[in-house]
Image 1 (cartoon, rainbow, N blue to C red):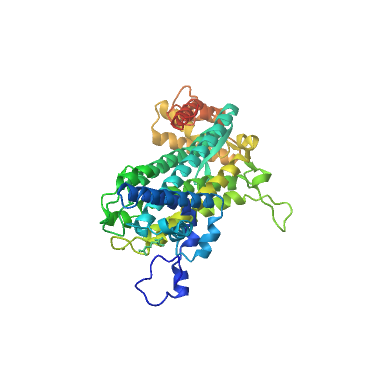
Image 2 (cartoon, helix red, strand yellow; image 1 turned 90 degrees about the horizontal axis):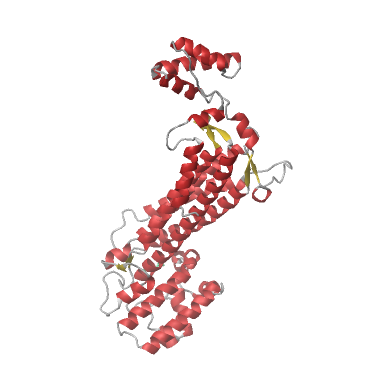
Length: 465
Ligand code: ARG
C-alpha cells in the first residue's frame, strides 16, 4: 500500500493501480497547492485553538507547511507530488508534511476530511482567480477607454452596422466605449464572485457531520479571511457554488471578448481594412508568404466557446447529485479550475493583442457615410418638422432608392425635394457622417458630448484619475 494513500487500514488488498490512476486528480489540482497550504495552516490553528494539539506540535506543523509553501513557490513540489503516490494535491501536501515532520505530521489530519479541505481550498482558489479576473477585466476596460479618448480627440468616424449592414454613423470612440462597457460589468461580476467565495468557511465541517473534536472553527475562519464559519457541514462540503460563480463570470467575460475579437478579425480583412494587427500579435502562414493572420483574436473566440463548455460541464456535473460529497465533485473541481486558468490566459492574450492593434482612421472615415447611413437623421429631421414617422420613413426610403439607382449619395437637392413633398418651407438635416454624429442629442448617444460624458462616468467607475 502506498504510503501517501490516506486510507487503506480496513482493506486487506491494495487498490487496482489502473483504477487508482483513473481516480487521481493530481494533474488537475496541483494548481491548488498554495491554497491547500493556507487551508492546512488554518486547520492547525483550529487544532491548536481547540487544544487538540499542543503548542510545539502546532509550531512543527506550521514550520513544515511553510517549508512546503516554499517548495511550491520554487516549483519543486510538483515533482514530489507526482511521485508521492497521492491521489490528489491535498494528499500530496499531507504526505510531504508527514515526511518533513513525521511525529507532528501524523496529527495534521485530525478532525479533518478531504471533503472540508477540498471545499475550503477550492473557495480560496476561486476567490483569488475572481480577483485576478476583475483586475484583468478592469485593465482591458481601461485600455479601451484610453483608446476611445484618443479617437474622440481625432473625431474618427465609423459606419455602425446592425446585421452587419451599414446602419448609422458613429464615432469610433463610441464603438470603443461599447466594447469597454461589458468589461466594466465583468469586473463587477468577478468582484461579487470573489466576495461570495469568502463568505462561509467550510473548514471544520469534517466529512459531512462536523466533529466530536473541539475544533476552533472561528480561528480557522479568521485566519483565512472568510466572513463566518459555514452553518451546515453537509452543505458546506457538498457545494461548489464559489467556483461555479467564478467559472460563470469567466464564460461571460470571454463571450464579451469574443465579440470584440470577431469584429477585429473582420476589420482586419482587406474588404474592411479598418485595423492593422501588429507584428508581435500576428501570425504568418507556413505556405503563403504574404499572410498576416489574426490568430490571437481567433483563439480568444475559440476559448470563449471552450470555457462556456467548461462552465456548463462543471455545472452539469452537479445536476441530480444527492446532497453531501460525491466523487463527481472532483470533476466539478477540475472543470472549474480549467475554466479559470483558460480564461485568465485568454484575457491576457486578448489585452496584449488589443494593445498591438492600430486603427486605420482614413479607411473608417472614408466609409462612415457609405450605404446612406444618414437616412435616419433625415427622417428624424422631417419628424421634428411635423411629418409623421410613417410618412417620413416612406419619403426618405423612396429618396434613398432613387439615389441608389442613380449611383450617387444624398445631397441638398434631395433635402429640397423632400421639403417640397412634405409641404415644408425650409428643412435642414445632416448629409454627412460628421454632421450626423454631432446632431445626436440623447444621453448615451454617439454625439461627442455624450461619448465624453460616458467615458468620464466609466473612468469614475474604474476609479481612474
Ligand atoms: N480527490 C478528491 C477531490 O478532489 C478528494 C476528495 C475525496 N473525498 C472522498 N471522500 N473520497 O474531490
